[in-house]
Length: 108
Image (cartoon, rainbow, N blue to C red):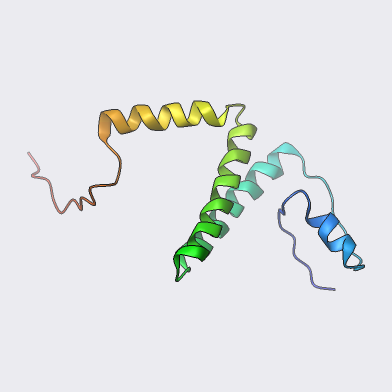
């Protein structure tokens, strides 16, 4: 039986169960959960980085967004609050739409 030892989406056990396969799971404590959420964020980002078309990229972006929602919940903040912080930062510092690549800044 392959060993996965990773955080999975809530309905994955249900999906596996429908295949008739045997599996084991456990519920993590909060300390382990945040560690695994952070690992999952890197995993999903790496999967996004390896996409080769828009369709796959959108799938991986959706996975990243799901992780962001879970992280927000863990930190007891709503996604609306995170979006407000994002908008505030965008107003003050801009976004990334202009594709500006900073080369150097004079050191005084």
